[in-house]
Image: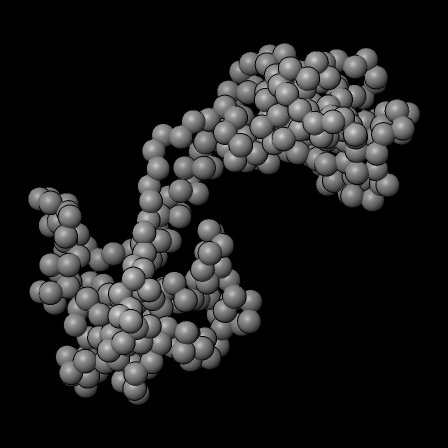
Length: 304
């Protein structure tokens, strides 16, 4: 069974609170059993990797019910049902969700805060999405990242091979390889060794070296096993044990399988991973704006 969205958890959370004062972790255990969630589903994380999805959705269900006056927090980390919540359970609505909560004046006032004019009116007229606010933000962020990855690869293909080589230099230096940018650029030039485009120091002192192959392929064209095999053969001829094969497209399943079972350490970087690394290390991109999401600091409000 899939993990219920936070609106579907509102009624179960209220029912659990009706049994007595509880907490989100305790409610999480009970709800996981109630919905027959598998161990993997119970541990499934948000894309950020910082919180379990189930925990996050229960938190938001509890938070909204509290804002509507149906739950209260008698002490830190605990919540309990209020008389209004008990009355609601005595005559439950056909569906307890955000749209229903918007019929409660105190919740409607909370929900439309900081949404002036038409935006406030629109928020009252329509229910919130099934995803929690954090999930909505992360989904939007992931969509923006996917669009940026596509745009990066398109722009790379619009430039020539020399630009691609400079890009690889910039990326490797940003990742900590090659020492200074000047040293990296000097070593990543054409080496003349068949199947190898360049070589770069793995560390500042040059104690070990990594050989590089770069192929600028358009989408739909994949790098096959023969290309990876030729690159590996060049490594053997050079007495090298490490190599990086970078492409703007993809690698065929046969190429990936071959690279996984050879004694040499050959890392395959396809277009998606290349663009991810560029974004992560700030190569070819710049920060447009930063949004900071802050949580309540519970420790701050603890009286000694």
